[in-house]
Length: 249
Figure (cartoon, rainbow, N blue to C red):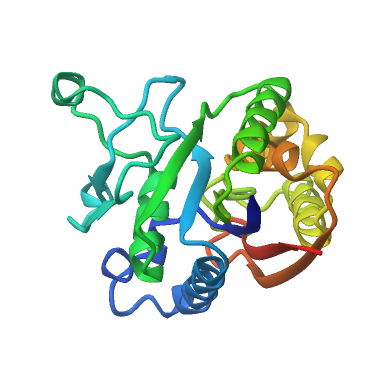
């Protein structure tokens, strides 16, 4: 049974040790993310996390990882494997040095921050077609709806990367600002149709890495009535970060 959906950024700077003690620009989005995690934990102690993988592989990743590639060796895990978790064989994990993609590192960090026992990963390839995202979301909907337990869904995704003069996407671009506005409105209004209609090419041009995850979530959540709430919406580093909650009516 779907209990609640939470949207958070896929930003390593959410983790205090990665951001460093002087990074005051991260405090507001981190506080909002933690608040959203607490709210999701209050609704369900079994989580599913939707996010982009690091590449186009569909093989299962590891169940633990570290932020070491972002400068600090902060270890996280997804907790106890759940019934939908695709666990790699130990030999496969060792041979491939499987780690968690950034989206699942964030999910593991927020799981621990929120005190829930596990989060099951659902990763999409960064360039997934909209139809593939819709199909994955429909499959996930069937699985979640048939689960007698309350399931919380965590969607880990970033917006456009060209929202300020010093943004990582090469500076301020009006087209990216307009696209981010539409994404923000869709998340604020729980508009699943608008998320499903996001154009992959337009999103890729604007650096919107979160598009596949949002489209999986749109298929999962379509046809339901939601109460939506935005806890944070800004671009402190020129990247669109949104923290929002959708609660069934």
